[in-house]
Length: 192
Length: 139
Image (cartoon, rainbow over all chains, first blue to last red; front, side, top):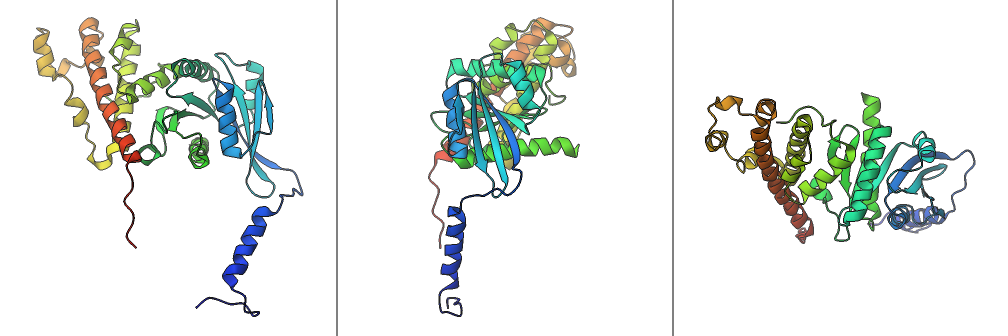
C-alpha cells in the first residue's frame, strides 16, 4: 500500500519532486567557496580539455597554456581542476605555484599513441625529479580502458606516491574513480 | 625477487616499462641500454613486482607466482647451458651480476621476457572479461 500524506498525495511522488527541485536549484554561495584542487598534466591540449569537460561538464577557461574546470560538490564546495598541456619541461614557475595548492596531480597518459606517450613519459621524468606530490597516471585509449577497472580498480603502483589507473575519458564515473585513488594516496601520506 | 622500491628507475622509464609489460612486449632490449648493473637489478625487481600485481588483479586467488616462474629457464638448466659449476643457490642473477655480469644479464633478459609474456596474458584476460556481456540477474 503506497504511503500517503494527509492530503492524499503520494509521499513518494512528493519526495521525487523535492529531489528534482534540489537538482534544478542554482547553487548560491553564501560564504567563501571551499575548494579541493587537482592538477591535470597532459602531453597535448585536446586530451586535457576532454578530461575536464568529461569530469566537470564544461571547461570554464580554455587558454593556450591553462585550462580550468570546476566540479560542484554541493553548496559552497567544489573540485577545481587546473589543466596544463605541457611538452617535456613545463614552465617551472607555473607548476611550482600550482603544486603548492593541489591535493595531487593526474598525468594523462595516451596508451596507444606512441609519440604522445613519449612526451608524457618525459613530463613524468621531470615531475618525478622535482616534486613528490601524489601522482596518478591516467592511462586512456581510443579502444577503451587499457586497464579494466573490474580487475584494476585501484590502479597499479609504480612506486611510492605514484599509481597508474586505467580510465575511459568519456565516462565521468571512470574519472571520478581515478580521482578517489588520488585522494586515497594523499590521505595515506597523512596516516603515515 | 620482490623487495625494495624501484627508486633507481626514473618515473618516465617506469611508465614506459609498465606500458610495454602490460602489452606483453619483450623487455630484454632494455637491459642493453643500461650500462649500470644496479639499474638492471632495479628493472628486474620492478618488472617482477608489477607482473605479480597484474596477475593478482586479473586472477585473484587463482594467481600463483609459479605461473610466472614456470615460463623461465630453470636455474639448474641455466647453469648447465652456461657450463657453470657454481652452486645452484648462488645462481641468482641479481647477486651474480657483480661476479659474472654478462651471464647474469643474459639470465635477467630471459626472465624479463618471461614476465612480459605472463603480464600480457593477465591484462588481455582482464580486458576480455571486461568486454564480455554480463549475465542478467534472475529476479
